[in-house]
Length: 429
Image 1: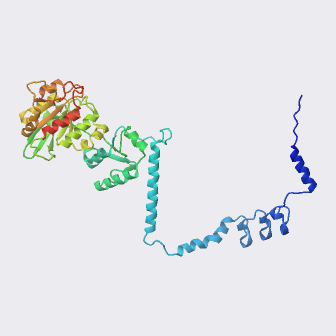
Image 2 (image 1 turned 135 degrees about the vertical axis):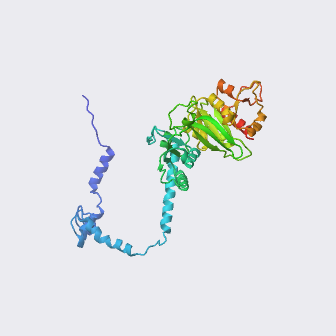
Image 3 (image 1 turned 90 degrees about the vertical axis):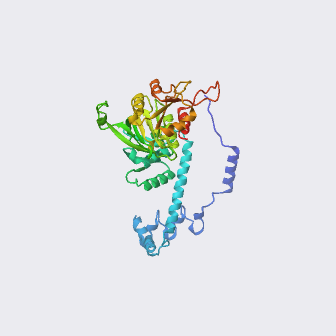
């Protein structure tokens, strides 16, 4: 068996033996020199304070074993008393206001940094929180949609809370609630951006979400007469408090009249409405409502089945017009058209947007304005893919078509909201 042996370096052995022969020893410490040359003597072990572990409150007159609080009280109590006697250096509160302003600026800068940082932080790294929702409410999002709902608070049955994120949003909506005197009725809740994104289902929310009950829509039976001199007209709707079915013998008991008035400016003498027949895309419904309100239409009617419900998506796409324009549902659109065309109900004229193909009921596009100037008119637009149903086309008075300026184009038609806007503009020109 081999053994490993270790030896010291020859140079080290040579230096050690050299120091030993010369009698060289380690240099003395600073406290081991001169008068204080005592083995182990430290600076705090000399003179008056020569006590192991001696603390300031354990020395001299105040030497109380372990009573630290009494020592500090005796030493510094007079300082606080003198500060109370000094006159205020900020009698008008300017310094305090300035300090608060600086603190607010720092908070704003911190929030801005956090918001910027969150844009580049993965969802796993974020501190997420779950937003509490209720199936009895819907959550409007977007500055215009929420603002219109708050301003027309009487249209919806209940506004429960307003959720906002960010300092700018808080300042804006607090001022809006104060102007509308809704500070006590509608509480403002500060939320984080993740919760607002949950409530808006990932859609752009502009840092504000409104919790409210859904719109309660009347079911229209037929349109009624029009007073051309005043612009007032009415619509017969189903009584929501009555569960009775509507027949010819009980129409008076099961229906209620709603009085409406034209609110758009211009030379229009008769009201103009829009009937949506099975328009299923909520973005299209919202865009139609927005165009109808902007161009001066007086109401919108949509089919009750196979149509997009008035969801927060519709409210966002309408940019708040949904809260301002009268909106009704209709069960059977063909029967609604026939009942409204009767002379005793005002003799309304219905124009349906469809590929006319040279039929007898085809109305030139240029005649739309003269038609609406002489009688109350309703523009009917249909489904995005199939257009208006055959029964609706058959019950309408006229068909109208927007011509395609390109022959053999791969684009065969316009979006339903764009076509509605063009026809309404021509009709109300």
